[in-house]
Length: 405
Image (cartoon, rainbow, N blue to C red; front, side, top):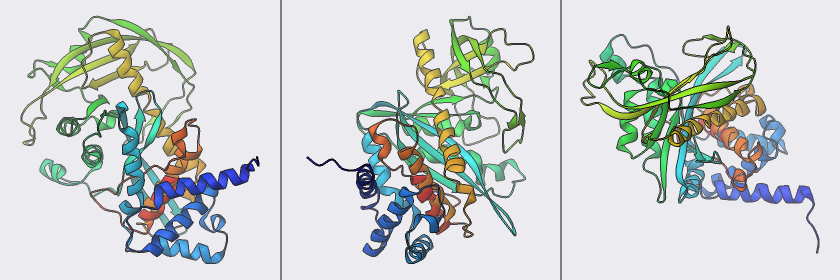
């Protein structure tokens, strides 16, 4: 029996992967679908190179540019097959974590720079296994609103999180979606949206809200609870670096250490935001507090305050919530792979709408080719375009492509 050579095997895998994720894309012309699959194969074989380096001939390069610049192609159509594949993988998985985060993409040209916000939602199994991307949004910052009413009605970064939940919608049969997000997602609208669509949530708290009818504050309420147990976490070394927008803070360097965290929890009702007519009633949540005991001198103590939809009645429940939150780092790895491994920001595409497509293709390549040692990593990740403000092709199409591969 003849054994296929490694190159032949890889070429076969690439064709199978492209076929699953692009053949059924609802494009307006069969010729566009054929060109899409051809460009997908070229980029998958050389994901870190420039577009001319990926394509074999100059004619294929120009055809790829024409595809990315075609106004008839909706970025959402490119990724529709993958979104369906991801949702199919979620069926029967039980708890599925939807990890959300955003990053800022910056392109530098001779005549200036261009910034674009990218928000993605990554589906994970409850054990951290990657299932695929289920949503992506691209936008640019709107002018700063002057009044509270204008801020409520004008699109802002806080809209990313509830918009993603609404776009993903209800979970497929046999699974439950759990939204996992960092402190910037601590928004009352996100909690109410999760409840409306049947999603659970684990959100790191940022605001010291009023709770239980204004009788106490969130952090004060947790500090009054007794310590239920301790957990140890390994903290890797960290270099000093800018934490990025919107605050541009400078995080201090940290040596690697093992931290012991004291765990508390409580059930509280978050009071609705004051002076906001959209919210009339409070939201009942469980809160897990994990605070480092005796941190080294000069080091900032580790402090987690997690808002959870699931009841916390024993230490194993609290550990499960913390373990789910720890999987959030995987979407950070996705953004790192896009920017560093795939050199997304090195692209010289000048048309704003094509960049989201470019980023999206790179995202799917990360899942397929990076460090996830499981059969599903060969699938492409799919996302849907943002509801507002919309970034149109061709840059959107090119970002989608880079995110995919």
